[in-house]
Length: 441
Image (cartoon, rainbow, N blue to C red):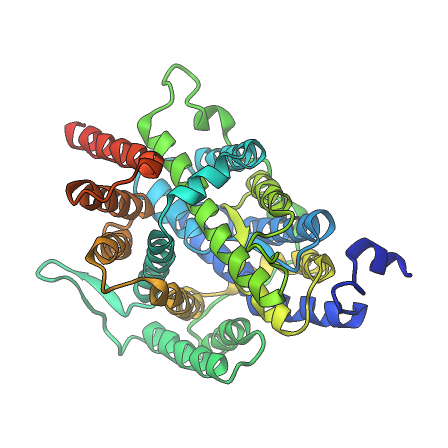
């Protein structure tokens, strides 16, 4: 028996080294767009694009290696879509939190997530949240991402009379974005591996050829690639320096932990079920190891200079290609580390090229809505409020709050609230207190 077979239990899971390598390459191609999209979002918060690209590759690479070697699952990790938008547009631009402090909060959230996992609190929280709210949160984040993409593409603009309106589709960059949207959509329908990445690169090349994108290539600089590394401000994140820990910082930390928790559970169930790795009783073996790997990746990402790292649903593409063990994740991790040396190229990608990716990634996050029982008002109303509040208030926290409060309120007023819902009721009370504090401030 070979070393790899013993390490990853290949024979027992009915796979081979060749299959696992091909599966890893497939997963990497389907999620490599994050190397270009993540810097385009976080750079709007003031982070250097090349540094974020390098941090994205490093966090994803290390996270995948930990997942593969420690948990032995074919699940890939990278900075999460949705949480990077929350980091930029809500935390930094909306609440005025310096990006270094925000990175400190990401690091602390990773530590908190690790603590919740090791103490078993995570299981308690997950069991308390209705599955319908899981689905609504995921889809609401998808709408949030898509709205940012539409705005970046110039397709949606502010309007004092109607709040938002259609942008000027005759603008060259908007036309470029529309072309990119059409290309990526066609590639996805045709199930071309790496369709999103191919579409981003092709749109960028068209922009260069048309003279719409200007970039002066420079030699790779180590300083440029490490410009976000170890820049997190832990003292600021902890509220040290005489200011105390403000409610705003607690809320941000809560959202980072809460959304990461939900995002991982949904992805883990989908990928492990597809791979046939779920136990007969419905449990996921070595679940804590998976969550430990995720928490460790988030702390590494914060140290390197990027937002929260999560498990990627794109891992299902590698599973479809035959991936069944952690060797698949290891291959993905190694490919991300190789991509690290191309990080400075992220500066050359215009918003018109990444905006279509945001729109279509958001569209693909709508799938969980099919799991909601829309015929049951006690479920449908909280889910709908969660779904629309996230993009319309530009806040994942508000969406969570509306959904939980509505769910508990409806259950309480109709006599359906059970003793087992106590934790959910506590969360609802905390959310109400949050809104009261915001109103009084």
